[in-house]
Amino acid sequence: QVQLVESGGGLVQPGGSQILSCTASGSGFLTYVMGWYRQAPGKQRELVVIITDDGRKNYAESVRGRFTISRNNAKDTIWLQMNSLGPEDTAVYYCNVEAMVDGYTREFWGQGTQVTVSS
Image 1 (cartoon, rainbow, N blue to C red):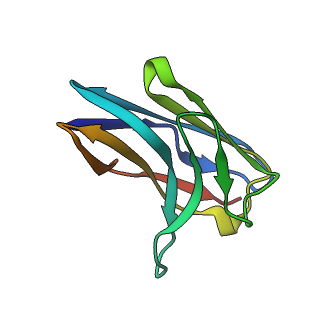
Image 2 (image 1 turned 135 degrees about the horizontal axis):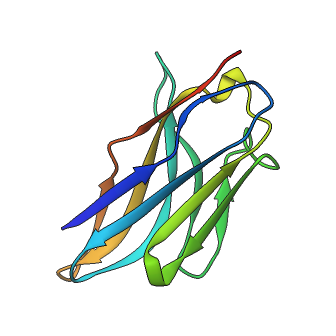
């Protein structure tokens, strides 16, 4: 099994910045795609950004140019640098990992971390 530990989040003022991190831990796994999704109140969960093990990235149009994802494969960790935050970015942010475990590709989710953008 793979456990995901998220950190970061909290309250930030409009125009501010925040960093989220997510580390995958466990044994016998190989991570492929890692990324972030978010779910705002009353809305469906949506993709924020994903990054592959070879560094390819796919950003949602709504965050392109403001958010930056980075990854350390050796540590199975990703970071999400969020700049120019606005109220529309308020949501629970979930770490997502696609990994090979016991010969099968499986998907794992973190518990989520709340990001609130408000003055």
